[in-house]
Amino acid sequence: RAVLIFDFESHKDAMVAATLRRVPPYPRVIFEQRPNNWKQVFSDRSQQDSRASGITIGNHQQQYSNFFADMYSTADVIAIMDSDAVFSTVQTPEDWFDEAGRPIVIGVTKWNKKM
Image 1 (cartoon, rainbow, N blue to C red):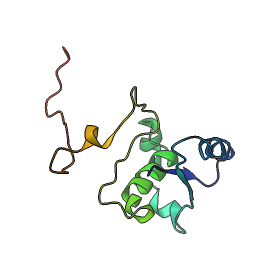
Image 2: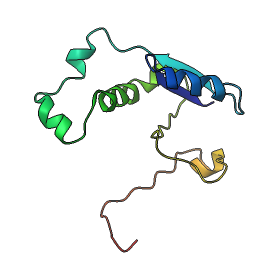
Image 3: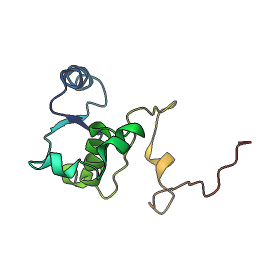
Image 4: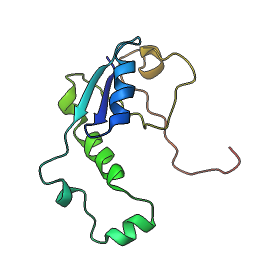
């Protein structure tokens, strides 16, 4: 079952979530609270260097959410998809698991610009 995790403080996230809850496959929607010590957890040694390289509080929130994704599911396997990625076709378990039920993982170890 799809589980979507949104930041609790975003009004735009709330509007998107309200729509997605009514669309098949009717995902479970969670609004994640920041941890109590979020300023400490999400801070960098040098905030200026982080901002200069494009790292924001939102980036830290996303990493935090990814790290604790297993808190929101009892599934044996959890797939995390970035918010700016899309599937171009319907996805089925056969696309993600082999005949023995093991996850299929495809990785790149050396980037080839000609690809």
